[in-house]
Length: 237
Image (cartoon, rainbow, N blue to C red; front, side, top):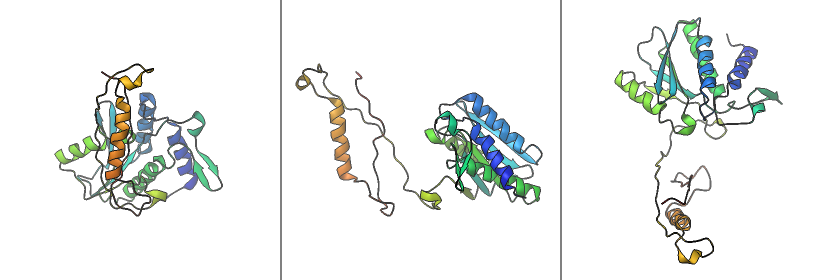
């Protein structure tokens, strides 16, 4: 039976774990321990899969031998000011680090799993919680998919309630290509830039050339490639 106030109290507890992407291990350890206690009285198995100090939780009904559906979430959040790590309610809305992305969704899936197990109707519903989605998922979902494949546990469907715009249902994506470019310049003193070649300026020119080939769409309805320069650094040899 769903109890709103208990859910909000649990959400407040969940949010208070400062599971930031800078990998404060104590908070991550405490959050995982709390998740285990959440399921302590249920017929639930929790597997820990750790890769390069990132730990993933694979949560399954004890009687289930393979998943048909996996609910996928992440428990880490981006850093924020201290006061944001507690749940606040105002005008019917909830505020706090992770309310939207995505501790509320994780707790909702935890609540559903516990409910279906209590009803003895587990239906092969599993959960996967990672802690590196905000930094690329290289040691999270990517590695767990390999593990699931090795165990012959690949599900028929994965549900990821980690939002489209305004929580719209997302059924497809364009995919992503990442790449890095090294541009050589010629060093010169800052008072005589005309004696050298500024590699950073060359990088901007390269970016503008790419933008001409791949102009960014202006709204969500334009289903075309988009381009983002995310990091630029200079001064190397």
